[in-house]
Image 1 (spheres, rainbow, N blue to C red):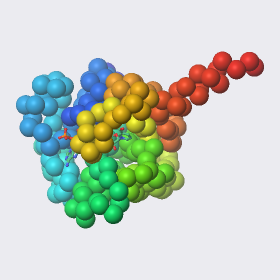
Image 2 (image 1 turned 90 degrees about the vertical axis):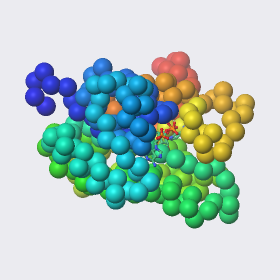
Image 3 (image 1 turned 90 degrees about the horizontal axis):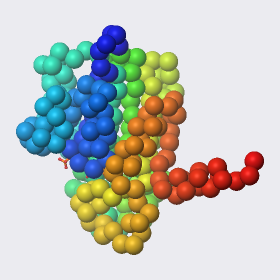
Image 4 (image 1 turned 180 degrees about the vertical axis):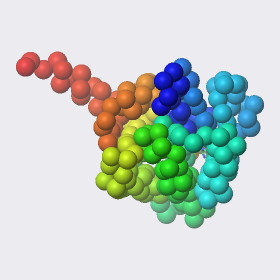
Length: 239
Ligand SMILES: NC(=O)c1ccc[n+]([C@@H]2O[C@H](COP(=O)([O-])OP(=O)(O)OC[C@H]3O[C@@H](n4cnc5c(N)ncnc54)[C@H](OP(=O)(O)O)[C@@H]3O)[C@@H](O)[C@H]2O)c1
């Protein structure tokens, strides 16, 4: 990065929930290129007129990657310091009830698009000696009523591990698995939050934790309220 120039971060999913909170925080430090499907004026109003915005629906992964590459060419962007894949969707339903359209959408948005875009952006990221951050989920280990979502996130975790080994020394790769977070995603997925919501993080708190993890060299991290309580408890133990 040239001295005095801001670091360039490309982020997906910055128009709601965790991604929106991340983007708000990164506005102070980074030059942001936001990828989303909302109208540009809505996104500028949420974030700032100073961001760069590329509008595309990532449910059509191959077409969306072409749109992003064309957008970056128009913006004359050659080097990207950080790519944060935060866009995601889910459906909360038993696997027997999941339709093939829902499965297709989960896998396209959560897995296929990040895989294709990461590959397409590799030269830009390598030029900047940059980093890829994949937002996974604690569900990657398997989760009731979230079979295809869990599969897409497990795929992302495997993708991260492979890239980490293949690209070591060229491009840093980090996968971050959030735990339950009170964002619009839950309602969109058909999940009704009950008393257990007390143990969910707010999107603001989750974004703060993600920013802290992104500043480290950890290859993989899990963030959930239980982990925070455990670490406080550990700190209180006598030496
Ligand atoms: N909330 C949780 O409990 C939780 C837990 C673990 C992991 N995560 C992960 O955290 C990430 C952020 O989730 P969130 O909870 O903040 O969800 P959210 O509030 O629903 O935000 C999801 C983001 O993804 C974007 N998106 C979805 N489909 C898209 C499409 N077809 N084209 C372009 N953009 C699309 C949304 O755009 P629009 O604004 O246009 O809809 C939005 O910006 C996801 O990867 C999710 O899997 C969430």
